Image (tube, rainbow, N blue to C red):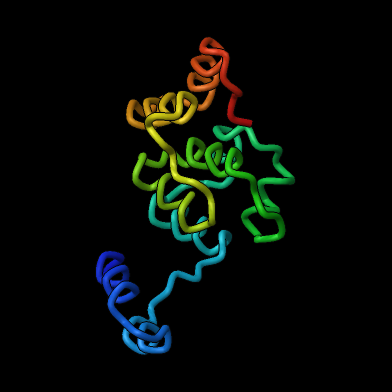
Length: 138
């Protein structure tokens, strides 16, 4: 498997994109439903508990699990809290599914990072976000 750094170097050094494809064919192509299923299996989680902890409406959450809906960045963050993901796992979830990673110099993102690092609940995070006049994660 080619590392991200190796792929970046290939992208800089190769003269044609065809050469990159021949050298590094392992691009990430993971549907959200597959990714969530992997996490649920690895962490031995129950969907009902994830839904309860994420605050996401049950029908919508099951549509996400089945791949029928595309969530917003905030919904992915809510799922992260529902699954008790680490900061690194959350960053990967965001990145793989096309969203900006959490950025420490952004006030709202820094509160989310803090909550993830401390293992806080989504409710506690939203209390903190409200107290600093930032949008809650819904």
